[in-house]
Image 1 (spheres, one colour):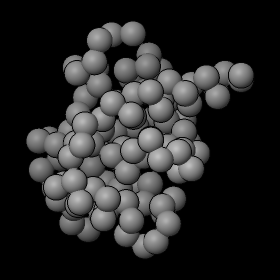
Image 2 (cartoon, one colour; image 1 turned 90 degrees about the vertical axis):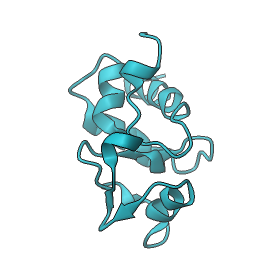
Image 3 (cartoon, one colour; image 1 turned 180 degrees about the horizontal axis):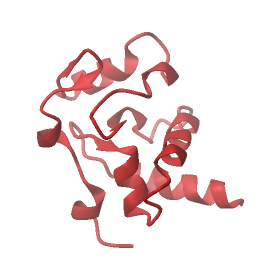
Length: 112
């Protein structure tokens, strides 16, 4: 397993723990994994996860709550529809009340 494949697996482990109706950011996952400057790599992992139903990639957004990964989902608004079906409010591709629905793995999970 290459270094990036191993990192991707760690990203998926964290993403699977994001609670229903909550979101986190690429950077928050990277920080939790001890790779704070690797938010873009977390994004690549999320993009590569679309064939894995158990990875809720729709719950990972950018640090401002924007659905920057939306173009990697099938259909025009699938990412938004998935979030809204969980009760997350989205307007103009932006999570509303972001601070309230934000899930920080650094605060919620034991330190690795």
